[in-house]
Length: 203
Figure (cartoon, rainbow, N blue to C red):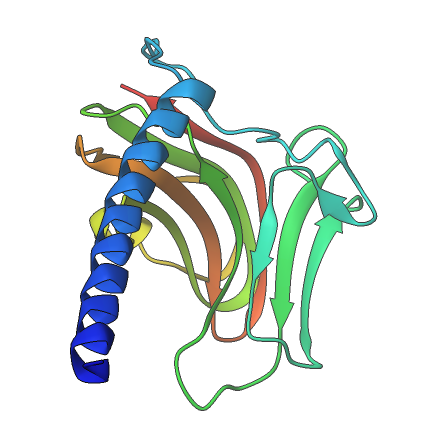
C-alpha cells in the first residue's frame, strides 16, 4: 500500500472541501443577508439608526449601542440621565488616562440594513469639557472585512476643548459592496463628551 499517495489524496480532498465550504459560506452569507434584511426602499431623510436618542435601555446600557474601548481605571462610558440635549438620556465618555498611543474610545452601533449607493449623513448634538479630540465616524465594511468607505467629522470641523451643545455632522457615499455600516462616537485622548439625538439619514 502506498501510504504517501493515500495521504496526498486525502490532503487534496480536504483542500477541495475547504474551498467548497468557503464558497458555500459566501453564498449562504449573501442569501441569509437577503432573507433577514430584504431589499428596502429607503426614503430620503429617513433616520436608519436605532434608539438614536438613547432613551431606551437597561443595566446602564442603551439598546443597540455598544462600547469599543481600551479599558482603564480613569475611563468611564455612561448612559447619562443627568445631562442631555433632549429627552431624558444621552451617552458620555469621560477619560483622564493618558495612553502611550492614540486610542479612540467610542460608543458604536452596527447597521445591517444598508442603503447601498446612497449618501448617508451622520449628525449629533455634542457637548464637551476639556476634550482633546472628539470625532464622529461612518465606516462602510464589505463582505470580506475590508473597509470600502469612510466618513468623519474631521473633514468638516474640529471638535475639542469646552463647548456647549452644538450640531456636528459628516457624510459618505455608501458603495454597493457595503455589507454593514458601523457608526462610532469617539473621544480620542482625554476630556469628557456627551452625544445626544444622533441620526444617520439617507439622502
